[in-house]
Image 1: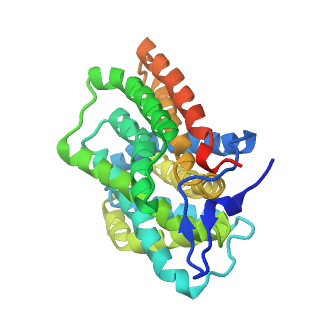
Image 2 (image 1 turned 60 degrees about the vertical axis):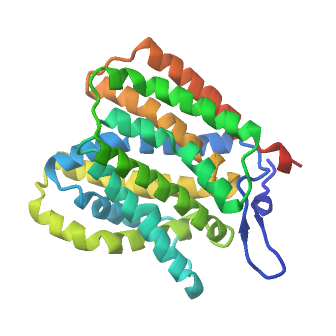
Length: 314
């Protein structure tokens, strides 16, 4: 398999790294394995957050998941390599925008928004990323990319529609929280993209999640006073942090480096599917035919999105 990392960034004579919205690397079996691992862990995050906030304030979630994510990444080989001091400001911004803030916004939203709706909105992340990345790189997405993203979004809507119709609830405040979280992720990954050309995903992600732990610690430590540390809550926090904020973000960093911002969002197409099956297994929720049709459309949309842009294909 050809690995064309160099195609994802341009280095002008000034030394400034410019971010492209895609690479010319084919989305092969390795990329699909990365996407599968991310979809399984991120798709379960809504259920885990719901378990945590039953016994803890929402402000505990970003600290707990960041801390256990940091611990998990600390033991990944090569993660503790040095970072140039001139990149520290960018890392601090990433710690806030890419992790600490959205990690807080999602549990705040799930206090008033049904998990099915939260999953649907999270599945819309490729749309948000496509828009923000187009603005960031000052290049409109190709018709091919626009069509692929829209197809995936239609499938996600069809998956979530039955749960919304059957009593899923949401309020304006919760929707605003979710929208801000998606914007944070979209901006964050574009800020991170140049650093991915310099550092390994493990090195970069460890620093970012460590800074997220530091930034979320004040609210998190205060929240611990009002937390009931049940075995279920502790297990959900460890799982969400070690896998959802450690393992999954490591996979995401690898996929982002290989494929570019837009195609790195392919796993989020499948998070509503994972959430639907988890609801069926643990909450006795029905899987209706409309959701199955939506899943097939999502898979088709993900395949379309996985294809490199023709404009930069060798």
